[in-house]
Length: 156
Image 1 (cartoon, one colour):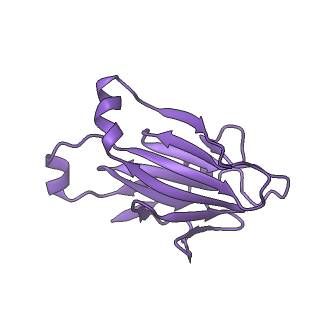
Image 2: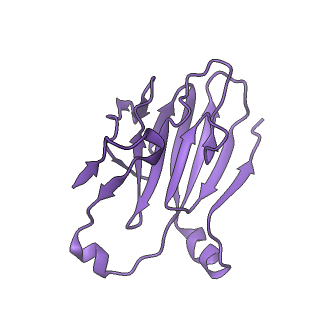
């Protein structure tokens, strides 16, 4: 069951995702995820981002956890958000002007859509590949890793 509070501003949207009782009893570690970001306009090289926090805002605002900006401004300031609940990752479109696309299908505004390894997101003129990083989770937890890290990679 997913509920959304329309009375709050977009950047303070509350998403409630009910997890079945069996999943709440079973202990789990928060997973790590990687986003491979490719700008289809060719203005930026491909980049890779790793994160493990519970919420990640995606948009062109300077305060966004993942900032996607180009001169065309096809990305809203607070375009979409990723949430982690019970080891799964969900994408929510924050009523963006140009919408968010998941595997070629539009994501309904304020409705959480679960992401699987290898799923493609289209936000403005950015193609984002979602990758779940299982092998690195235990190593990062052992070292006390938490939060967001940034890695830039250049492909020739």
